[in-house]
Length: 76
Image (cartoon, rainbow, N blue to C red):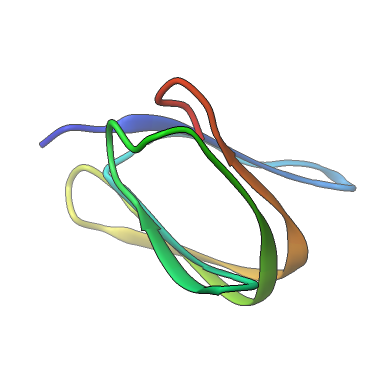
């Protein structure tokens, strides 16, 4: 399974950093899934939950109350 590097930062510091298979989060336009080799993309995040799916299929979840999502050159 293919992966991509993900960094999730908060005002208090780094929440998550590592390789993931998929990220699903809520943007101001609706839910969005980011997969490896996603095109460059930038959007505002909405209120909801972010789901991080790791290469082994396990999941991590994080609450989100806004912010920015940026995908640049295969890095999220």
